[in-house]
Image 1 (tube, rainbow, N blue to C red):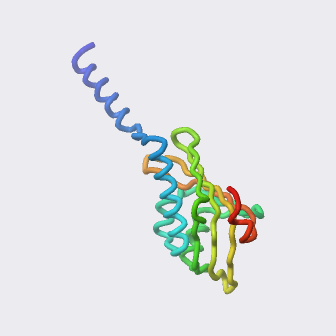
Image 2 (cartoon, rainbow, N blue to C red):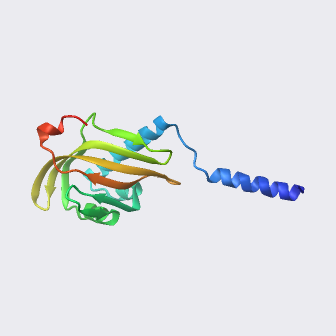
Image 3 (spheres, rainbow, N blue to C red):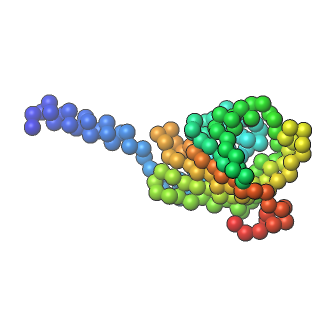
Length: 160
């Protein structure tokens, strides 16, 4: 192998290795995804569409308990319109569970408490959700969400 060819091969291998994302430990990934999901809920509570957009994948969808589907763009438009003013949009303490599914996929399951006013109507709901995050070159991003139907507040505090 000529020195020029050897240098080219070495350079190509170096570029290839640089393109592979550095993976954290599974526990560090769980902590990162847990914090990101908590930050997302806080951004929703503030109707902070800019912060939400940094977390959502462009083709993200959310499926509601009755089968309705909302795109990332619809979610961001609703936040910008402030159609809902939140008093609370928080995960119930102790209910969040993060599961890793290989090196690039994680799910977050938790009980969410939503309280506020939506389109003039008071809301005070508890529901279970599962959010799916995928690792991208830019870090973890929220790719898919599914929420259950409302559960009564007393039952909401029970099991995961």
